Length: 400
Ligand code: ATP
Ligand code: MG
Image (cartoon, rainbow, N blue to C red; front, side, top):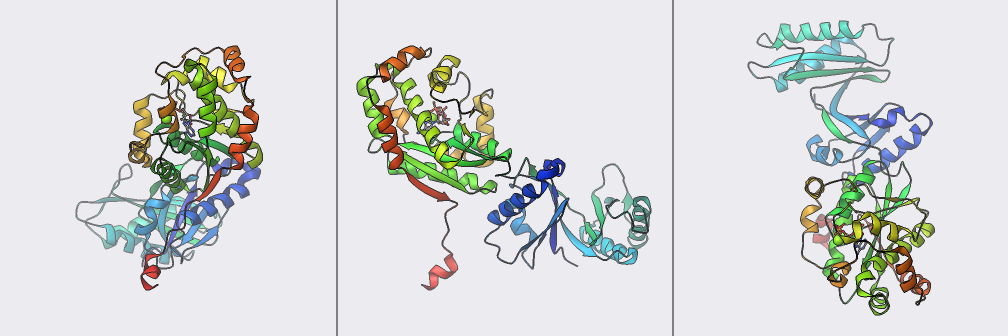
């Protein structure tokens, strides 16, 4: 008897009342997305549980990817029996035999969502536990910290048994909380900010400002790779690459050196907000963290934020750099982020940017240029890349 399906326990979304159906549908879509190369799997939706029918796909092959998907509290590979205590006993014994070695302890944890089943949870625990003990004499019971925990879930559609339970990524399924635009640089911080918003169910469209020839194709590819990496968390991500050279050059010409940084950020935010409007986003997300660099003081943020009344979400604002780096490592973006290709801000950064810019001053400096027109032109010329990109199927490409 092999595990032939995976039982998924929902996270917070079980408590979301009327939105439940939408949440479950998003979760299904996101699971299918990360498992799309496993063509044989099928998903069965339920009110408080979801089943992935493996159809001969090995559980081990999908386990890691599944553990990245937001909205899953935990999951177990399971076998199914009918609501028949003899069948349940036999299945449980087989599972234990597979995991058994001398000196191990066990317990049975039954759960009954179908209250019409003839035995209550204590009776199920007892019936299965004593059957296992009768057949494997060397096993002992430990209800606190057993080596083997036999999970038995009695549901209307059958009984599901497992000796394994894995934690999910928790959070909410991506897309369940609306859409936001992520300002994605090639640095360490902004991918982490994107990850944290995805975890709260926000659908992300990323925006990257690119300044050729000052910034290279490789710098752009790095951002594509970062966005692609974020799709591992059960999301499709559109990445908009905005040509920013002309605006940066104009700022260099027109704005006093110590204000170029403030002005550059304001233009980025203004452009992001226009794209947001067109794309139906509700907020803008950045990787800013208080005090990290000159543009991230409260005075700077106020002067920059002035270009829009759209909520600007800064999930890293109170995090220390080392903690951000820890998350970046965990989510697999760190090693991409530290590749040395320069980003447009690094190249144009003045030697001593204002840490306490005055809003009135920056507004005055900008008033001599028609930035509106330049902003529209940049947006017209932006390139959009849809991620994850289709990978070529190597089996077939060999044959071509
Ligand atoms: P990061 O590691 O995310 O680059 P950082 O500490 O280097 O952050 P800055 O470079 O000052 O800080 O950028 C602050 C935020 O502005 C970034 O987190 C990102 O959201 C946004 N940003 C900076 N440069 C770009 C860019 N070229 N394209 C898009 N967004 C950018
Ligand atoms: Mg940066």
